[in-house]
Image (cartoon, rainbow, N blue to C red; front, top):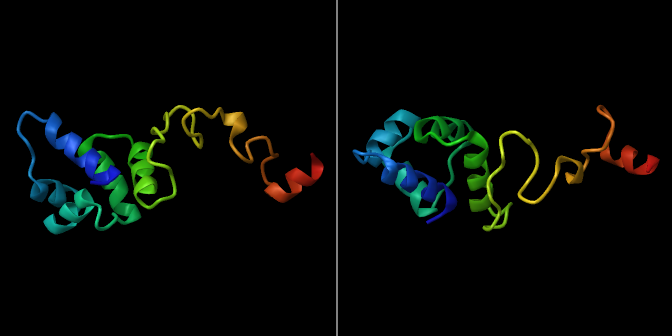
Length: 116
């Protein structure tokens, strides 16, 4: 099971009445089989489905996005989700340690490095 699947399963497990995959699918606007494929890690939600899934399962969007990035191989499996109060950082990073955080708005990273 992938990270998206874990989020969906956690949502199901946390409810007094376990919602079916069909109910989650209807709320997100996809087929029941799509939810099953996301849970199994066979396929990935489209970007617009990530936002709807976030709302349906009651998880912050950045956590759902981290799960999708983990499943796609862009983040290591041990990265914890974003803290919504510090955008664009990962676990253990401060905003200042985020690449490009110190550059002047409207400048490219290459120009910022050239000035350093």
